[in-house]
Length: 267
Image (cartoon, rainbow, N blue to C red; front, top):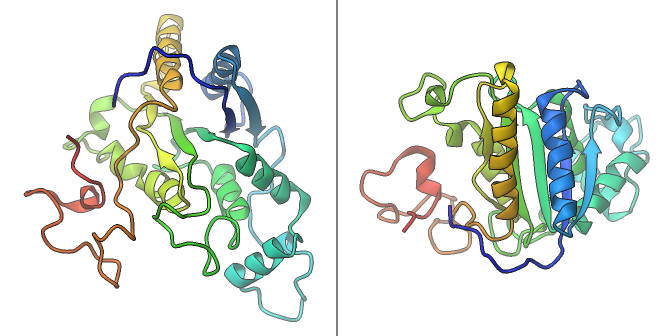
């Protein structure tokens, strides 16, 4: 991660999507802290608190008001048709407008069963419709032309486990691999540039002094949201992949394997 610049940043627009059922939780604390810190720096912030919004977590035919009940639901084509016609439900349309408005997106959530809570997964499923986040009529995914290109993205996640358990030899696997579906499969797929995630470990038993330390560390990451180097994922259209979307031989540094194949070596 590169250091942050000392030059003042131009005001930006940031969407924070928060997913925790307890308004007194550490995740709620970090959400409120991030919103306040960014606003104090001159940025505009919107917060989607999914539990407070009573967000509907399941994608189904009710998301597409014009879908005829006598025809099977084809999620991709039906969502694209509703998106392009402006016929999505108001809750989904509102979240898409927030994404269009934003210069950066922050997802704040606890790690539950090595993933995001269902309500956040449901936000992703319902909001990133074909015709908005992806689709045959849009530029290809994993490319500079993908629909949400130009936006920064940050995962801020809390984990009850210790940091060493999410390491290369840790029992839970590397954190970069656990978060790959969000970092690469959501952010990079749709054109956003993800920075390295911010993680608060031992989240179930943080004494007040460690909560304060987490705030200070988070403040530094928020200050670098638009200046820190993003994860250097490869583009689909940059010449590294063949027509079957497989990485061409010899593009990786010797000894590289697994998901690391899909990022350029860091300097």
